[in-house]
Image (cartoon, rainbow, N blue to C red):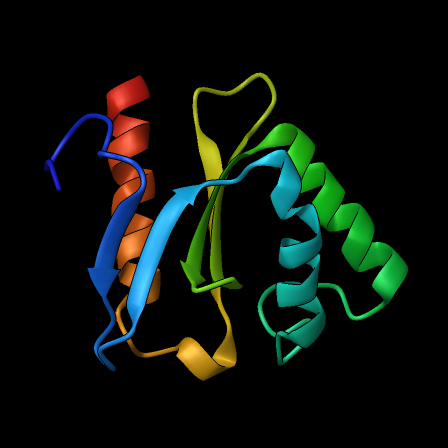
Length: 126
């Protein structure tokens, strides 16, 4: 992967457990799989109240992320195992960053790679 600028997409790598992981931009057809990631994610409300525990609030949060953020997914086969978003802060040149990795896939380098891809995109667009 390039150190700065837009990374080649989709970006693939092997997790520390040897699993093939693909990182790519979120597409319209990914909504249900992203919702599924956060339905299974534990602990709910574990980091600054995210992801929301209540299903209705969680879905609203996800819809807002889809609508208003730059989103990347990490997938293993057909399963979304990680999500990163860059959320613009209105009237500000900065953005908020979030990254979540399904608990069964943590500590395998997936969050690190999602962060690298997002940072490369931020540098490439800034």
